[in-house]
Amino acid sequence: MIDALPKRLPSVDWIAFGAGLGALVASFVFPPLIMLVGIAVFAPSVLREVGLLKDADEWTRAVMHRAGFHALLVAALFIGLEYISPDFHASVPANGFKPEDVFGGETLRKGVIWTFLISYLIQYWGARTGVFRILLGAAVLNVAPILGFLRTGGELKGLFILVAFGAAAVFVGLAFLARRLPRAGGGVLVALCVAAFAFAVRNMGDPTFAWAQVSLIFQAFLVLGVSGIALLRDSSS
Image 1 (cartoon, one colour):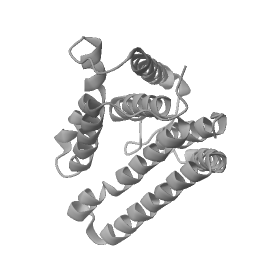
Image 2 (cartoon, rainbow, N blue to C red):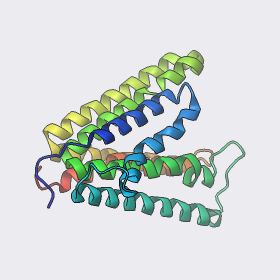
Image 3 (cartoon, one colour):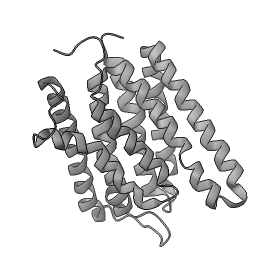
Image 4 (cartoon, rainbow, N blue to C red):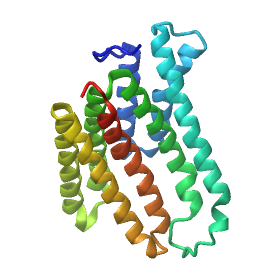
């Protein structure tokens, strides 16, 4: 039975997740560091599974296994969609996104990592605390590209930075709303997810951005939709 009060993550997880977040931010200056993100997120679970790390009880291991299964399902879904995507006969110009750009490579990596992390944290901390911290993490991720903008932003550098801080502020506001008024926060997150869906579908008419909209739908569902549904379903809210 899951405790009503949120548990405290083992110190190794805090260190690993912090290292992963730091590597993600630093990757906008030195791109190869992006490879450390997946290693940091999965390393504690792998070490526990092979018996080298023994800081988790059976409940924590069950949460870890379930989060891993969710990540596996997403990987299987993306691989399947990439395999059947040629049957869609989508017309994509040379400078547009192709199916493999959406269902494979970088997007697949992000999907697996984010699915595992979101599932793990919501299960471990519960919906209210888990979603609060996930949204704060999303705020940090929105600010992280500023390092890249400062180097390559050109004339639009100021606009990019302003948009990044604006998006981060929205996620911070959503995080505190979710913690203080979980059901209202869940409703707002689901509404934003639906709005993102509508925006993506509306812009699919342009073949240059069609596959990018598919990626947007997935990311909106994973961060906004899953978090909102978790808050609405949480009986303790």
